[in-house]
Amino acid sequence: MTKPGYPVSIKGVLVRDGRVLLVRNERAEWELPGGRIEPGETPEQCVAREIAEETGLSVTVAEILDAWVYHIAVASKDVFIVTYGCTTSSGSAPVLSAEHNRIGEFSEHEVPALRMPEGYKRSIATWFDRLRVGRPIG
Image 1: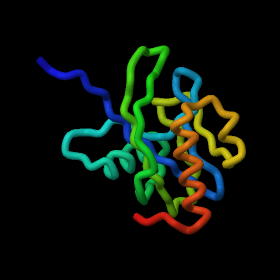
Image 2: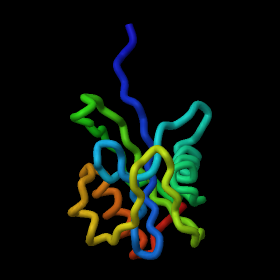
Image 3: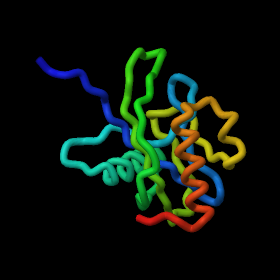
Image 4: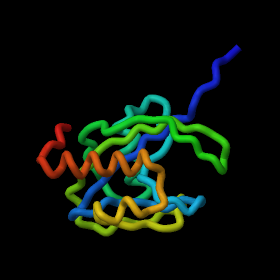
């Protein structure tokens, strides 16, 4: 008999010019770009690939921020989420992929009012705090 498990989703907190990059999903929630890890991939490779696929931006993955199990009520499923702080030297505008219906960049002070899981808000606040003290350690 197999044990039940959770799908794993690796997400990236990317702050550019003092604004965090977010994408909006089909549930009308804002979320961090990222997705499922593929066989043979490290979590860092996964988040860099997913951000490139979803936004067209190349990133450097700095450090792990948080991990938790997110219950998606409307889908009645749980997903294990891991978040990483990311940086980019790209000045290009992000490009919306077919996976989401909107893309946006928000200031730290706008994030608490957004419709988004609390775990993402916590990860965003953590990355802003670490960037403020100059602490990406990747």
